[in-house]
Image 1 (cartoon, rainbow, N blue to C red):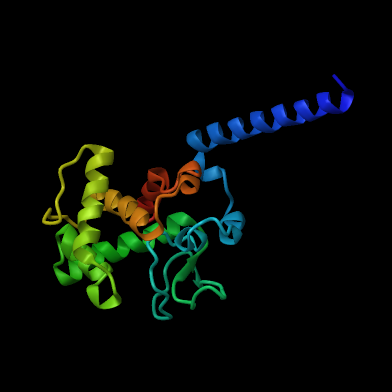
Image 2 (image 1 turned 90 degrees about the vertical axis):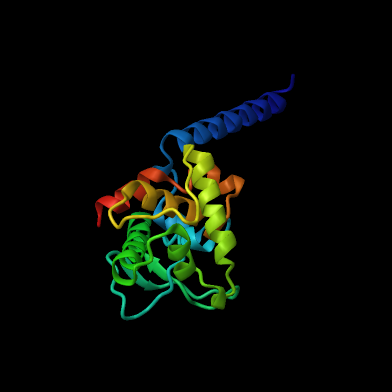
Length: 196
């Protein structure tokens, strides 16, 4: 075998080994796999993850969320609309605060009522389908038996964090790339709950 061919094989094997190591690392420790700077500039990531705002909370100058940096950067692909957060736990924290406020301040205490306020039909959403899909994801992932009519208490960490997980899949999709990066990630969502 020629020397050049041997080197080519060595480089190929090293690349495969690096890819396997990266994949294993992503499965065991996803939050450290990609940095905030990488996330905000990675064109393969959905907009919500790039903004550290996985539930796509609209930017409102009156809302001074912890960890909020302002509005998302300008893009030729879309109009500026969503809040930008310094880290994913702060984006999830804001979402959990909003859901808890819907329960406390508006008496919206079922999965459907929360989703209907979150993603109303007048914003071109399909809240019935959205709520059913959130329940399906929760039930499939955790063996639960929630329905859109399931009542959720303001301090029900288990249901609210699982809703945030499922809603981030609805908001951002569930691609091979996001799964490889470990997104969404319950460790991050649980950290957000601790920040409440």
